[in-house]
Length: 302
Image 1 (cartoon, rainbow, N blue to C red):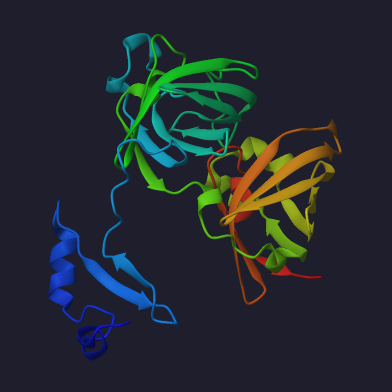
Image 2: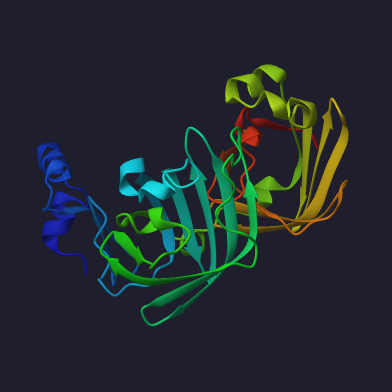
């Protein structure tokens, strides 16, 4: 049962200075608040800062890493190798994005963990965003990468000898969040319906990719019906459409394209989503992610 002290003081810390001191301290943590179950048999304790993961935790999670040119061997100092890396490992799959001021590319595939060895097999690799990959994407579909790995509290350490992505071993990757499947599932029924948005020429010029204007600007429609999804765009060079299946984890929408106006497709797209007052907000996620979908909120039209 709840103790008299808990009943008297309440379940929340009432000392704001204590909270502020803990937030800026590099080592200390403390209880923020507690929740008592209705039957008063269970107490959940919430801390001000996240608790560190055990050193032997699994690799699943969302990670981030910034690589500078000086972190790389001289021969590898090309924009496809340095910049910001985003990586998600989740239930035997991986997806990553690399973005710099001179290149943008992304890929996804399968991951297998055996002891201290982690093996990636790329299923899809594409240059992406305003810059593409002027020096070539450093990996291809079907390529296998083998790393030694370990988790150290809030970081993931990957080491690889002479691998094609040396930046991933430049320093530990910072763990920003749980993997999507480890997060609370946002109710996908809120997405059901027809949504409309529009990407203008001014949007694309601001994004810095004038070459994409002919086939990436114009009115957009996204239709979500359970696990079936379809998006269309009336672009200057014609009408484009993509159909496929949707999967949901946490606040992540995965749109697995099966067929497009160009023919069969197996490319997955990833986005973070939220709905508020019949407005759908889409944000880029690691992997192949259509950034232009996030320029404006989408409005429900059906």
